[in-house]
Image 1 (tube, rainbow, N blue to C red):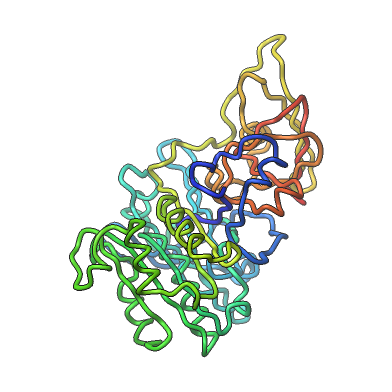
Image 2 (cartoon, rainbow, N blue to C red; image 1 turned 120 degrees about the vertical axis):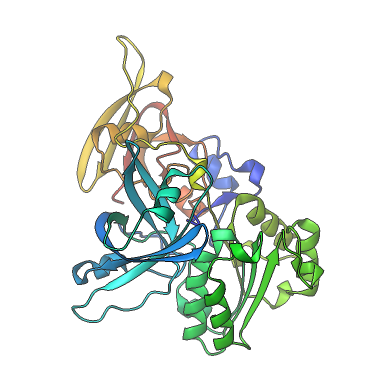
Amino acid sequence: MAARNLGSTTRAAESHAGGDVATASALLRSAVGGEAPTKRPRARFHRLTVAEVRRLTADAVEVTFAVPAELAAEYDYLPGQYVALRKELDGYERRRSYSLCRPPEPAADGLGTSISVAIKRDLGGIFSSWATTELAAGDELDVMSPQGTFTSTLAELDGKHIVGIAAGSGITPLMALAHAVLARSADATFELVYTNRSTLDVMFLEELAELKDRYPARLALHHVLSREQRTAPLLSGRIDAEKLDAMLEHLIRPETVDEWFLCGPLELVQLARDALEAKGVPAARVRYELFTTDADRGAEPRSGRPVEILAGEQTVTIEFTLDGQSSTVESPVAANESILNAALRVRPDVPFACAGGVCGTCRARVIDGSVQMTENYALEPDELERGYVLTCQSHVKGERVTVDYDV
């Protein structure tokens, strides 16, 4: 996904949420700012048919899925949310999350609807390479219901001046957001700083130009190309701290902006957050989402990494509730495995997507006991205070823990 949906610590170097949940909650900042939905529907996969695969660039495609009428409510979403795709490739189950790139449209009675994601091929990425070269209309794929908090109710953005900063495939959630905001509110304005290597790498180039033509006075586009010379020096070269400061001085005045949406790799997102903080922009007005590449990840577990418990070995007990059913699994202390990995050994349907602390799909609430999280880019401070954890990053502290995926 542009990947979605990610609470982070104050600085990139602090992204390790060591210590217990209470300690982590004191360190973490909100990824979305303001109020966000706290009750998330249970993420579920459904088999959907690919309606169209459209080429965006040499290494990126837009994939549209047909959603039948009976599942339309399951795939209702807000601009900025994402879906996870699931496919077995090379003997492993692969799950990848991608932001929805089109604004939601209500389904006509009895006719169903559609959802679209953009997939960019990553060098060495198994899933993205397959999707951008072999996936075709008529194929079927497991698609998780929409998730994520890199969004806002559109009513909250009426009449606002919104700025998006994106890199590469980070444009996908901002495409949906810009379309929706500009169409809904006659006095909202949207400004987009979008950085790529060259013109040939710009995803949705024609759509962005068309959107600019439709809203010439309310949409400002700033294409920054790192490997292609542009007329304006400010729009040429890689965005670094000096260039971003210049943009905030001469191109975009932070004091005029109501909401900021940042989407891209950690380096760019953190650079922008630091720059905005230095300009006095309140953190509550800055929403951000990180994305990871397909090549960043190894093969995820399909049913939990095998763990052998030796005779007399010390273990911890993990109890969890999912869909109203309670399960228990023992985990060797020496294995230091995550709650998610242990749970998958007895319940392959435990929800997860990225398994890297980024998407938040594996979120559960600690009912009893305590855990230590390794990474957290998805949970907000108020969620941590209420005991929610990312089970893909959580390790048991003590002898026993009980978590609930249904809360």
